[in-house]
Image (cartoon, rainbow, N blue to C red):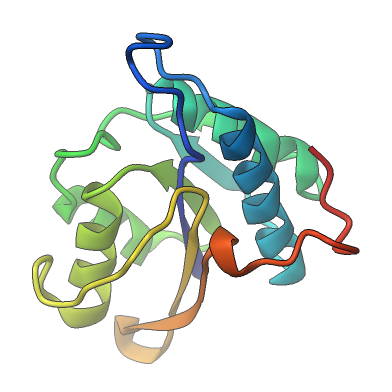
Length: 162
């Protein structure tokens, strides 16, 4: 089972829009995140996102781009400061690939808890639109398969549309 942790795309500042929807670059990064998931062969049944507009929009873009168009579903508990322990348990019990679209510092805390058994121990850098792929292996241990950073992606000839 693979768990894909996706940080939402860049949002507009609150001064421009209090709901903070995705900026044009945020939309581009969401498409790049979807492309990274496609290239990894992701076929999640579960695609969950927080209630914040930027996460909702990022998840919608990913849903449209993935095979089978897994429905993007709102889930409480994915806000920036929410506890991660329940999510670690849910991931441990999951049988199919899962995508979580969330925020800092929630995502690196969850990754740290799964990989290092300490939510504060490991450090994972999530750019906006970044993807961290974790895979559960024997005996419930988790390993990092890849970390995708949109700033390192080439946008020429990769089939990403905006």
